[in-house]
Image (cartoon, rainbow, N blue to C red; front, side):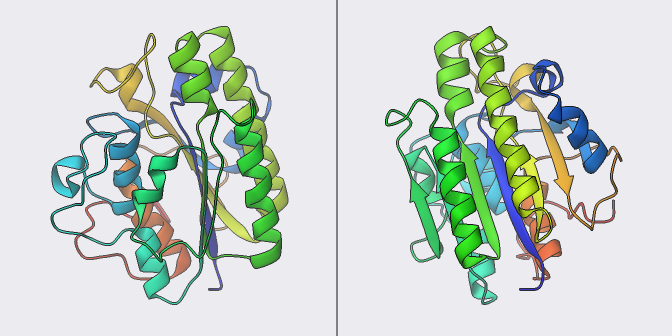
Length: 259
């Protein structure tokens, strides 16, 4: 495909944390991207339901994945991975939470890499390393880079907005930086989170759980422009528009290209 997309999901990233973590690249992202600090997750604001919405453009009530235990959706609407493959494209999945293997039907990932977060203290760095190496070698059309350390080692272990949580967030943003610097000439890049969090948990309708950042980088997006009224279900049609493929007719989100 002429145009390519990387979707970066930083698990558990709150918008206010991104703005206050102290990493100077956040201000650079605001200059480079079209963005919204008020984008919305879905209910329940848990990892697998939110990522299923992020890749299938439907809320959990429609796609049927409502917990972190995968159940086969009743209607089986194809997600972005399946749609790219049906259009003849190639896909990559790089992740450190094993349940995300179920985001697409078998055969939808052209390339994939998984590392357990217990294997390396900086497993976000490990998956990013492998993602960038695969992009250099294979140039897949659609790539998802998922990072879990912030959620597990930051939020659940030390509390959302704790010193360790903010440190882990800064590390994740450093990985965003090197992805853009490494791939930004070839790829449009979507940066977001599945949900936020409060205290040591998430899953509720509280603003701390539901409010997430969304940054859109690439030639189809105006640098330094803000946007409103965005959510996780807008990501698949946005990726499809960049890639030049048709969105599935049962997707509920809208493309944010040229918004």
